[in-house]
Image (cartoon, rainbow, N blue to C red; front, side, top):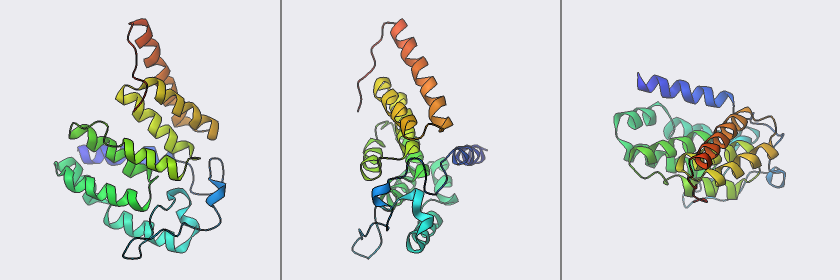
Length: 196
């Protein structure tokens, strides 16, 4: 039952993802061609998830990665407690597509389950370093920071996400939650952590 609820949750989140096309939040400087970084085996690395459909080789790679490393088996491992396999598959996915929203989200969940809540920070930072102009990735990171207790830093990321993509409903909802959390913390006399 849990498997189906996570799958439904991911399906719901994916409905709020920006379309994989040029538009608000696209990193225009890297649109001309896919990145040419390759590993020892010749496999492309650090590709943009949101523009993958524009380039046949990158689209093919995304299909392979999602078919073998971010598929139903990974969700079964995640829910079945085999988190080391799920983590390795997510890491593989994020090496090829650092801003893959599903893999980033699963890394957050894995971190919670293995009692390493900051596990996904480096993955988000890499995604934002490589592709800084996607509102959804910033919104995910902001929401994650708020969950970690870095409410002020999370609010800044969520506001930046909305600056990049003013129509991003998910970011608006997460920002409202974060501001409510900040207000409760202030009224209770608690200070939030500044950030990671």
